[in-house]
Amino acid sequence: MTLCIRIPKRMVVAAVLALGACGGSSSLVNMWKDPEFPKQPIRSAMVIAIKEDPAIRRIWEDAFVSELANEGVRAVPSYRGFPTALPDTQQVIDMVRQDDYDGVITIVGLGSETQSTYVPGYVTTAPVTHYNHWTGYYDTWYRDVYEPGYVTTDQVVRQRVDVWSVDEGGTLVWTGTTQTLNPTSGDEVRKDVTDLVIPELKEHHVITSRS
Image (cartoon, rainbow, N blue to C red; front, side):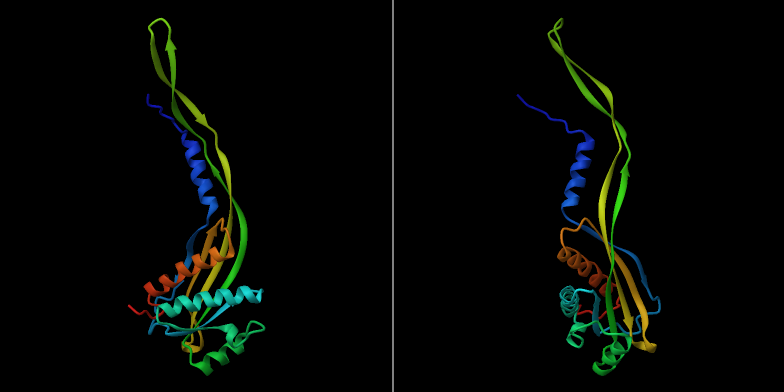
């Protein structure tokens, strides 16, 4: 005997949403690139993670430096020159001139928020089977079933990455915001951000590339 179990569509949708809530999904939004850049891709850069926690700052800067190095960019974390506090604008300018960097990359957290989304209800059909004692057979017919709407809640974490060229006194050449839904950890957010941003900078020739 074959047993067939029908799962209502709403349960499938809920299961997918539940799986999504177990791990974050990230995307790049609000991207902009200077249409006149690059005259030459950035080959060396200082990386500054604007984070209040010194340990988190170092972890973010190291992550970006590592990924940039994989693309052939000479990068250095700002904490190497400023281990106790974030550098101010003049200190960054002095360090860039001293070590001959041609770019500065900054990462700043934009905080998190709770976002609610309404999933509207819908009508589907479901089989109804009844044993007919008069005929000795099972009769099956279909009836409409209304699945009510419901609300899902997500945590949204955003980071902004800015890329500055030192040409002409410092020019913003690329900026993008990432948003991660329901992250399970700060490590996940950081990995998602680097995995999204570095290939984008490479593809649009904002940074140099080994390929």
